[in-house]
Amino acid sequence: RRRRDPGPPRRRPRRRGAMSSAFAGWGRRVLNRLRLALDQKSLPAPAIDAAPARARPALDAPPAWKLERAFEAAGGSYSEASATNWKHFWASKPTVVGVDAEGTQHSPPLLVQVAFAGNRVLLEAPSAREGVSADLQRLLADASIAKCFFGPPDNEGLEVPMANVVDVQAAAKGKVAHTNPKHGPSLVAAVRTLAPGVPDAANLVKNKKIQQSFGFMFRSRKKDFLHELSHARKLYAAADAWATLEVARSLHARPGGN
Image (cartoon, rainbow, N blue to C red; front, side, top):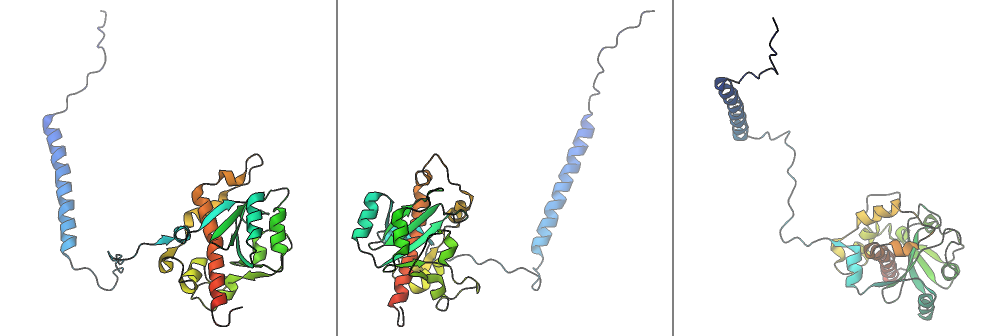
């Protein structure tokens, strides 16, 4: 005889009783977990091994200020280095300036900031081939102008002759409480303690996100580095140089300052 084609295998229909029993089992497990959780909540918490609860900030606690916000509140402004802006700088006849650099993993650094009178800051992006500009070289070598750095000036990677340079961090080391005996206090800590005239100095914090971002930046051969920077990064960099100068002025105004 010719065998009949049975066709595709038929699925065996699931019995309703089996489905209901599986659902009932799942429901019992959920209820047991809820009972266990409620029982644990009712037990007294251990007093010895319990981790201390993190204190919540008070509702009336003052908000933290980024350093660049204080710079703006003080009427600070920055401008990109150019022949015209350097001319205005020399016309102001500065005797002391604050100098800072970003991207110091490169030599020369990616950005150099010069703070001077009137809460103004010049931003210069050195060239990879030519290094810093002639005006910046002139400033760094001028012995009649004090250049204030927050940290050893040689660590900025400028690689040009410098005269009359001051390490403000080293000068503030014995006057500011800090937890780093090797490097000394942070810039924000120095501002909090030594420059109370800075807007909301007691609540200042460092913008760590922007600070760390400069460590991943590179200099482009085709584009101007300054044009690639956002306003937020320029403001952050300018605030660093401005704060360095503010701390230096405060140290000089203290008894025994020089």
